[in-house]
Length: 180
Ligand code: CUA
Image 1 (cartoon, rainbow, N blue to C red):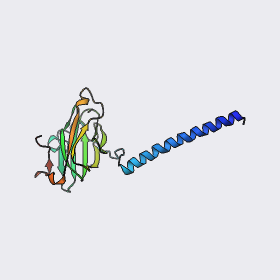
Image 2 (image 1 turned 90 degrees about the vertical axis):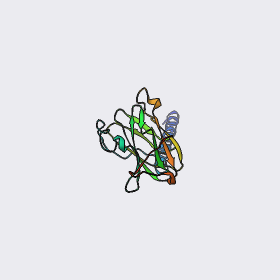
Image 3 (image 1 turned 180 degrees about the horizontal axis):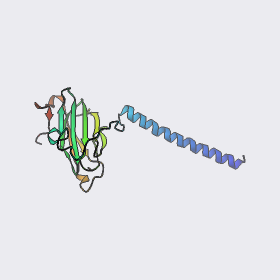
Image 4 (image 1 turned 135 degrees about the vertical axis):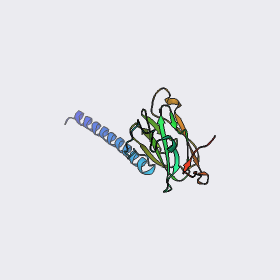
């Protein structure tokens, strides 16, 4: 190898090392986000008929919002539709595991709850399920983060996190935001 060739080879090896170092940093970031912050792609696959979901079943109007199950689990069901969430506000307890279930009857929407690990697409035909625990009480903004049409920028809801003592389901296990 001539001197020039070995210089080029050393330079290429250096850049190879830089590339592997960058891949390593990204890999560590993904693994630590998964393990430490519980941020990961949904592992859940569940289908629903978007043309009939409003007629019966868990996404019929009367079943939307937060409910306390017989097993004590808190589940919040929200429909994402052009250009609103139904309901616009949902109450959940602070410091307890909450399961969110979303479905869309029309186009792809996306949801995130600011300051939490809740972030998912809502694709027609599928139920998106996300689990979280809210450490702090307060009102959290939940905007749509997937462009879904002209009203996309207006599409948002609130999640109201209340201390467990203020989380009072009615006799049907339902909890609503009530008049504001
Ligand atoms: Cu729904 Cu953007």
